[in-house]
Amino acid sequence: MEEAGVVTPSDQFFKLPSNLYGNNEKVESDLYFYHQQQYVLFKSKSTLWTSLDSQKLISTEIEDLFMKFKNHRDHHVFLQDKLKKCLERRDVPLERKAQMLYDTAEPILSTIFTSPSSADLILSAAEYAKSCIKFLTERGSLPELIKLSSDSLSEHSHGLHVSAYSVALAKAAGFRDEKMIFGLGMGALLHDIGKSKIPADILNKTG
Image 1 (cartoon, rainbow, N blue to C red):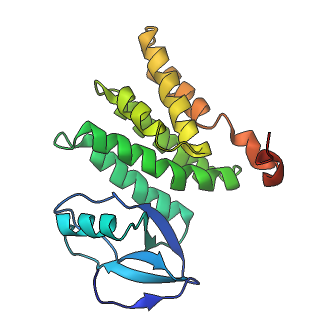
Image 2: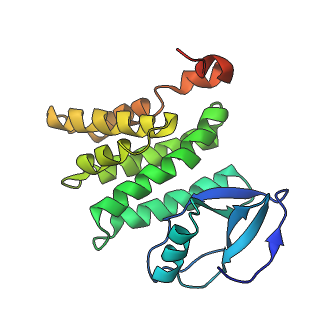
């Protein structure tokens, strides 16, 4: 990790997947990790990500990185852009694409579930649904998502899986209309959004 400053938690930081960057990819803004109630610089802006950085994350067991944004919308736009670029690259293994899709589900969908009436956030969900559908156009993509579900399944990754299964089923059944498939994927992605109105103590009640 780089020698660098420490920033107080009062600054506006947003969570990013730790595997967001691959080798030789440029870091757009300072990256931090959270340790002992403070944000500590991990990687400086405009530097290139290396295999050594990935090894540091593993050896120090850092699960999340953080970056400063003005608001949730800017955070989502950044994540969507990184996800799209990853999915479009032919040299990126299908396994990494699946992991990126999986890891961006939580920071994007968790915000939407806390503010379901926000038009900007719903549009963000629509962009995410498009990325999900794009991923499923690649042969062998669904099994890669299924593998990840055995390791961790949250409310938000559950929405991703329901969306993926729904789109895959529609395609297997012969449906080809893009608008219909998008609507199906979007609806499945947000099928549990009504839970946002239910108190957490009820949702998390044992049994």
